[in-house]
Amino acid sequence: MCLNGEIQLSGGVEMVTSDERTMALLSHILCIVVGILAPLIIWLIKKDQSQYVAEHAKESLNFQISILIYSFISGLLTMVLIGFILLPAVGVFMVVFAIIATIKANNGEMYRYPLTIRLVK
Image (cartoon, rainbow, N blue to C red; front, side, top):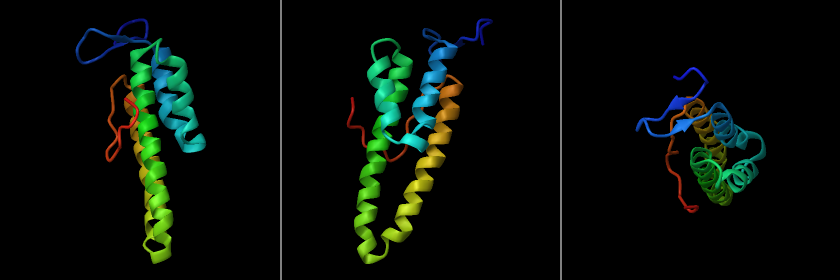
């Protein structure tokens, strides 16, 4: 860790500022409250300013799109009762992995969500 609050990524080339870590962290944690809107707005605003924030916001956006798809399928499956188990499981899955991603973003690390369909490249 450097004196001015910047941290060095694994390659040692890119420095991540405290503001970038905060924006990356917000792109993950705000999803619990506002869903897909937070990473979409952060990605659209910061994609040309910070590669670190853009990558985190894009990963979070892809995860939220995947969660919407999984929730829709689970909702359809409520007709055969299995959806009543899957819907809460998808919600818990989303919250747990959003918190893990938030911690990783705050530490200056990149994080890839599991079971994510990467539609936004």
